[in-house]
Length: 474
Image (tube, rainbow, N blue to C red; front, side):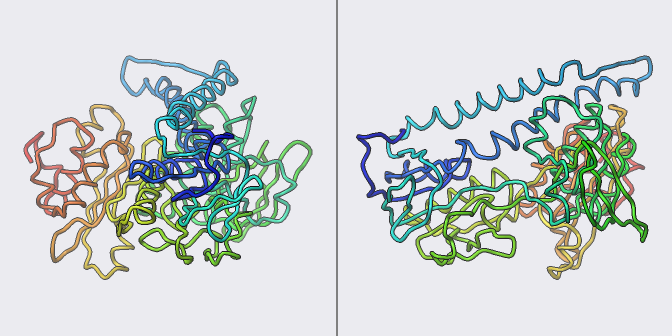
């Protein structure tokens, strides 16, 4: 409920700062356990995911896929399709309507159903001994959970403050479609939005210090680079940033690549070089709450900070930056803080997805991580031209890579790059969660002509050449 003159003044069991996915998860968990919770807004209700992250970006990415799908119909003999952006502002308005609807239904409208939650939307909060200060008043609570989220980071490039820039939020709020954009950063946010804008008709360049998706398997990074280049995106990898500046209405970025200095120009620079935690004004240092080099709050496996009684969850922490992990971590924090729990954060079978086309999804350890952890590693790499589903769809862009332990044959991780990779990765999640071996996965029955069948074929690739199998013979 919204705080008013009749609401109790203080004396809560738990104060939660931030009303996004993590904040709601923490508040609801405690309220369902019979605790009285102060949920403090500290920003737009709903947080990053519904307002400026997952929801709006994935709708726009789907719209771009519809354009590409129509245009790529010609991969089937006898078909020809065309599509274009007829009214950019109408598309943006539809995205805004979806955001507003979900923010209301999935956040604001839920609050009245939890009588133990008092919602306070009175401005930024500050940690104080014994609770939280917000809107000039002190909220007394023996336990606090900080869930204030994050925001797009601004890279440390001379002149960047004066150059015409966008970030992942303002990019989706433009009132017109730009002719050209330079994306700084080749991480998951950068590649998703860059491909989306290129499919909308914008001339796109991605500039990154190493290569695309640097935290995943190199085979996948290379394959995605080839896909994006084939779609007309320019990829400038291995770059060193020097300066950024404004030249009239345009942006200019100076970089060095392979020892040669280059000057790149576009309508705007899009800053997708990472995210920064929202910790300003919380007085973390004054309360003895430690942060890492990036300013994120350090938490233990119990989600407690270095200050007893203060917990944290979501993008404001040094943990995984995914909305489902934010909600998961917040639930653990709430149980441990006020419900007598002793639960530990476990991301060993955590799936992740990059919503490019083809999608890239994975779980567990990549090869380099497995070797660093001391495993004697074996791998299999299966290109999609070995998967019947991809052949029938006439779309063999992608691959599957599995990592396993030589001694035990147990799966350690895997990545799938395929048009339906996001929906197929959960099979691999369950395989890791329940300790399957490559032999067991290869002997599991999968339905024919599905992308998930590729996981079985990739498992069989450890011991045989699946190209020599007939259909369904494995």
